[in-house]
Image (cartoon, rainbow, N blue to C red; front, side):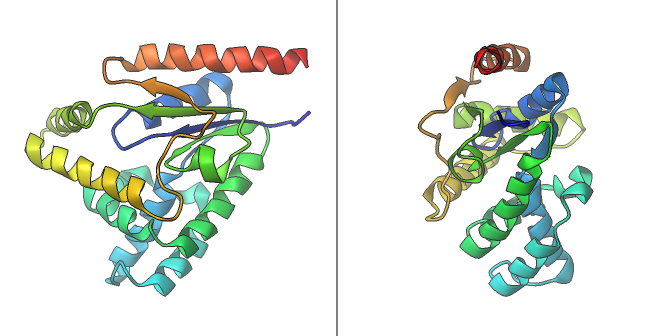
Length: 216
């Protein structure tokens, strides 16, 4: 039997998968990787160097230099970095480099929770549990607006919504590793669900899988 346990969480931006991933990793004492930060790290490197985001060679170099132990969420969570990340994420060569790093991370005991866009379909197709966390674009836009306003910022709901729809289209429409649920993923629609309810629903799925694994 494998000595690691892998939980793959996919879904669009703002669906709550990051918060859910952190809660699950903490509860089950597993390693945690927000794979989106790896793409943001590549984009951030290009922005820092003043290089165009369509410079594939530079993006590949930046991807090879990404250190998963040094991903700084406070720097990489900037909106401009996120926008840039979804542009460099369309390059198949960049994805291949980062996917290898992500797979190596998942293999380390005792296992990991990875969240992103293609974990269950590409990065960890043999994950023990696959969750696809989603919510309507309107709900996700409202959450983003509330988040911005909670720290004293201001934003326009319609602009945020348009941004989310654009990002969804880019993520779902790319030729390489598009965002979609794995065939065997458990769907969690958080549109009308608080994080605690989503956490309990995910736990029920995972605990059932762990019980069956222990019986084997």
